[in-house]
Length: 417
Ligand code: FA5
Ligand code: MG
Image 1 (cartoon, protein in one colour):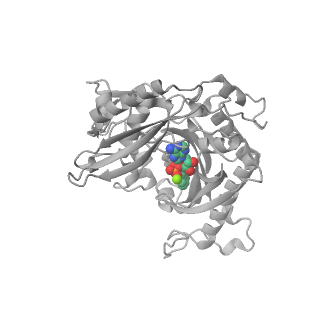
Image 2 (cartoon, rainbow, N blue to C red; image 1 turned 120 degrees about the vertical axis):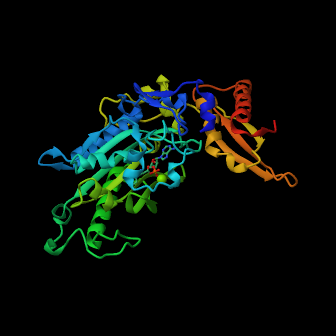
Image 3 (tube, helix red, strand yellow; image 1 turned 30 degrees about the horizontal axis):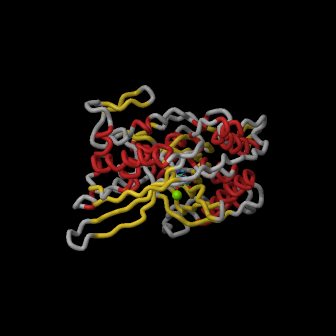
């Protein structure tokens, strides 16, 4: 919070986003660097790799799932990223004191409004409008760590599918006795209290089957996939899918059986459903072998022209731009006497807002406590790398010094430079 008020033009009482003015308050922490990205809509920019992967997912769902000859899933890719805090959290049953609401993790316009942190923020309104099956694609905003697969603005695709009793059980023999709901049930690791086990098992199977089909459609049958159990306040049970990428497992999506309380509140209490949210950058990185998430923001024709295919199904053989060498510079400082006052994401944000896309990664390399004063010291290594040319040590030094000064001015740390 504090950091940002100091970097914004003094005395400005409102923040302008997409033509609307929002009253600033003690929650406002959005920066001009971030606001400059709102409205870029990379996912709607024809032949951008994020557009291409979105189109391929859409066409997969259109061709596979139809209802009397019409696509079953409707697609929403133009919903404003400015949402209420209520939409982003409360509508998804995320409790008032949940850690995901922290100012340190989100971009707030003020106490009531924020840049959405996930496309799930639109689940309730779309279900309420009567839709049974939909996809939402959009830009989402988070204050997060800095490395080659995390960026403060990224893109998600949400999918939701609801089933009536008849729809879920139609393929099951002797299904007359089966029911979606069961009275007096208990919540277990496998199901919610109101759901019947039969319903949950079919939903879970359909969800995993749908997503496995999607990734094999995108990557081919050789793709290595695994499921990990996890937790979201708006689904139960919940899972994450990981895909093998460059020798490691990379998380590409979260999903699960929708909490019935959410459906009840959205006027669909007679149905059950599943939902997923996937990271479009992560999938595009795997599909096209894109080594760094910053490249999606590149305006370099050598990058963009590679995605100019005639037909969206045509394979793209992406030639990574050669990687120019990185430069590493360390920064060490004493934390404020009350070390709780130091928010790591405030530091990451400061580094990103000064270093911009020159910063590839920030990693904590050392911390220790002074034996006498009790103060904590931290040392971070900042890796600088330009995507399109070789950086000079002098250029990197200049940026690094600005970061050193700004950290002292804004974060209450004391440089050991
Ligand atoms: C969510 O955002 C949930 N809303 C997903 C969900 C939807 C669960 C519906 C259940 C039902 P998560 O924070 O894990 O979950 O993010 C989902 C995906 O977004 C991740 O798997 C990853 O692919 C991508 N992602 C998350 N953070 C970043 C980031 N900083 N940069 C790039 N991609 C990211
Ligand atoms: Mg996750």
